[in-house]
Length: 334
Image (cartoon, rainbow, N blue to C red):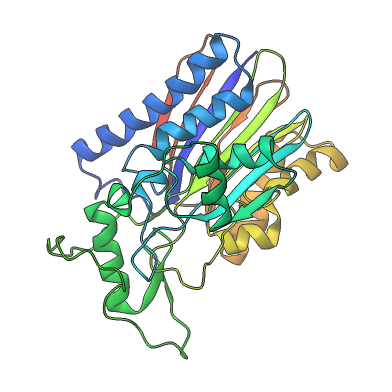
């Protein structure tokens, strides 16, 4: 039985502050990405192809913090991360800090299939993408007004934003900047606080008709991040994992997911303790991450095609569908 699940980020996603029109847009975008991957699986495609295609759909949508909708760094540009992993052979590829690649998840697959490496950073990852003819875009392509407004708010407060309602203070040794170094002068709309800051990583997990599993994750990171900060997304075992038992894609406060080796911990609980996918995910998300401040969630699928979508935040953009079943598209705790 084939199965697919996707996510578009977790965090403080308040039902009252998301307008009906905005909610419809998010649900439509999730459904489009879900159908993209599901149709491939239905036609016999590999799980790896399905998760890549689903994530590419989310990267192309400016609503999500990945690809075209990526958040701004402190300097006013974009640094994007992505990873994918094939479960049956444990091959993996990841990129971090890419600035021009239209779909970072495609660059991650290049790393897996065209190099002997697992993780490449900027500028090498962009160079690899250029050599193999992946679409590259100027910085204007990645600009969205609401992301720019988020940066201005974060700069004004002297804080880093995890695409979420809570902010992290800049260390006391740093002087808060007043404007990004590469501020686009032509964008001058007034800055308004975004009530729906969320942890905006996107991801997909799948089981194909051959019984193979795969996972893919992509993100623009955190608003106002500095020093080439890298979160959990491109770190295999932290934000992305797939083996013969399960496929995992995480979304949340990356530093906590890295320290917990969250994605791999799910697989370990299943392998060494014999837990079900649902119980292993519950322990990681609710018992291990939540008590120490690791807000967020994950999507997972096991070798039987069972899907679980746990999160400890107020909401998580998510969708899933198993062979012959109805699609689930959800945002809040339901």
